[in-house]
Length: 371
Image (cartoon, rainbow, N blue to C red; front, side, top):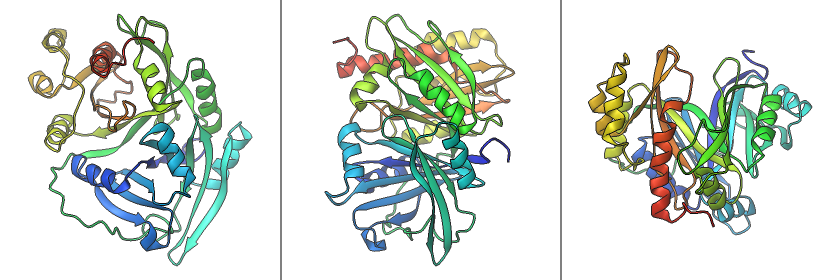
């Protein structure tokens, strides 16, 4: 085992949404993902449909209800809107990982279970996370079928005109929680998953003239799992975390960061595929970037052209850009990130530019003033 739970990395992330077919089409188009597996009425599952989309080392499972009796999916979507229900960890042993988590305070939602069909079996278990979310322990070493039992070849066969985005894998998953919940969930993640607190951002570290937040980042000792947790902090206006909690109706998963080896090409192609990103920083941001004289491979004028942010991190640097919220509610979004020369941070130097961009969108939505 390379860490306390024998975690190999993030496996799949499951979204509960109003229309899985529409989300699947959108991800296949905008992210140039492949529709690789399907579960639904045609496969004997009568109350829901699920599409598995993959790209390189990334797996998204998109699920929606097709029967009023599916209270699990419908209640989530009704309360939160489209969002992340669970993220999974591929582990060496589901039973060992689950037992470790429960022994250290994990709240069980599904005990270890072997799910079988003619192609073999997968093992799964899950513990609680935030309000309605879950962390799944998953192992399919003994399965030769399509993803897991109940899934087969996709029934949605459509020609999608898309440009390759070069997206690779999940870098980190960010949670937004209520005031005074951050330490609770940081301690929970550290104890149940054998993680450690890597970074802490206190009062004044992440703020603008109007809004602020507190944040801690937990990670596995081998750095393959990274999970920031944010909570709101008092400011003159409503912060992005307060807006999220109000619109999402509770604590939950705010965004997923996805890596790429060429962020300029990725952002260019994602824009051509129809993705909307946050407002480009002012010209002064890039003028100051040039004045700093950092040794970066990319042309700063190209970064400016596509609105990409850059920050020095130890011996390396990172490049990042955030999409606008994906659904109808201003809640979940994606981050695109490229780490250069071993950069391990999260772009603290970009926080003010990022927050000011989010605040401009909050003003347009009428969600910036405190009620």
